[in-house]
Every structure is written in structure tokens, then in C-alpha cells.
Length: 226
Image (cartoon, rainbow, N blue to C red; front, side):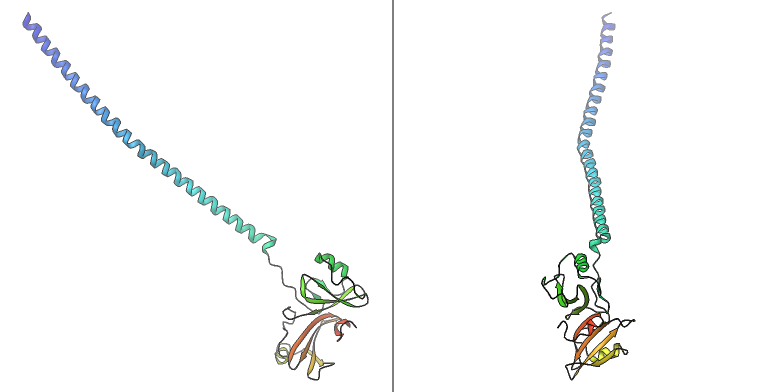
């Protein structure tokens, strides 16, 4: 009887020891697995953060690119981006100022008053701050002519200082008449189609010295306003 009890105890002990060993092994494996997971989690979090940062950076870059593209588009289409065309002197106008216009209308269009304010009503020269290189002849309140200094473009494409030979080569049909005061001078005349206005250049000693444009007979006044 005692022998059977001992045998049962031994078997029971072996069974318990086996279970204990398996439980210990499983517990150890679980600890290793948890440790492995814990070591991987920071790396996974960091990777996710890096990916999030990359996405954020790409979104920022795209937003900046879109903003720059929008600004460029606005700049190109803005009226301020379109350069105002240079005013050109011709027989009938200087830029958008047409000879024959009332001075008050020209002042309103430019948004500034002509100077000097006090002048002869019959005939006087005036100027505008926006156009310092041009003087306008005003007769009885009407702008009839403009005298231009060097650097003001004109419809003939001839500049002050150009040679008489060059002008005749470029414009073989130019009308040439003797100068009133200069023995070695001429007037180079470019009339409009109706002969009501002209672009007139003065030439002395083979060089263009002055250019004006306006209505007849005002543009032909050699002395200007007397």
C-alpha cells in the first residue's frame, strides 16, 4: 500500500514539475516577446512621425509653390504689371493728348493742373509735372502744339542730333524748306494726310536741333507765342 502511494506521489511530482517547467518556459518566452515589442514600438512611432513630417513637408512645399504660382499669375494679369506705353509725339497728338483739345479737359485727364497758372489767354506755353520734357502751346484755352526736348520719341523715329542725310535716307519724301533765321538750316516737315497738322523738325548745320508737332498754323510759328 505504501509502495503504491509513493509511486503515485512520484508520478504526481513529475507531472507537476513538467507543468512548472512548461509554464516557466512560456513565461520567459512571453517576457522576451514583450521586450521585443517594446523595443520595436519606439522605432515604429519614430517612423510614423517621420512619415507624418514628410507628408507635412510636402504639403507645405506644395502650398508654397501654389502661393508663388498664384502671386506670379496675379502679377502678370494685374493692370499694374502692364507697362504704360511711352507717349509719342506726332502731327496730331502727344500720346493721349490730342491737339485741338481744351486745356481743362487735358488737365482733368492727367489729374493735375498746367503751370504756370497765370498766363496770356491768347497764347502761352504750359507744362505738366508728369511730362517735364514737353511744353504745350495753348491758344484761347485750346492745346494746339507741343515742343519736345531731346529724348522724347516721335512718330518719324528721328531723334534730336540725327543727321540731315540720315533723315532723308530714312524718309525720302520728307518736305524740306529753308530755315527762317539760319543760313545753314532747314525745316523738315512731316504733314498729316489732310495737311491740317504736321511734325516739324529744325535742322542746323546738318543736325536736327528741335522737334515739335501740332496743328496748322500754330506748328509753323517759328517764334512760338509772341
